[in-house]
Image (cartoon, rainbow, N blue to C red; front, side, top):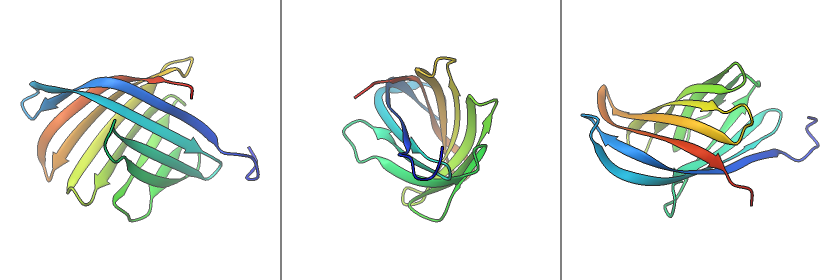
Length: 136
């Protein structure tokens, strides 16, 4: 895609996932939504629980890796095989780190997500779910 074309939008994706505490006990059900806009060199990612302010991170990309500059959410990820993502985001104001693993279905309509939350070396909890594409 040339830089003059409109960015591709992926999403919004939404899901109802499960949140677990540090001992992996289910503590709540979470409505979650993500929107991703992609062009040749940039990824704009909005993510968070439905009805709350979304975290927004802008990442630079080479198509296989993405990385952010400093901001309220900072981090990086790598793509594997075109469908799997592994990365870490630091939510600076909340002082928590998010380790994230995603795998997209072959048709691109669903995405399985596992997010682990840490403060320092202490695991705070885990969220998982299947995000489904919703055309708007």
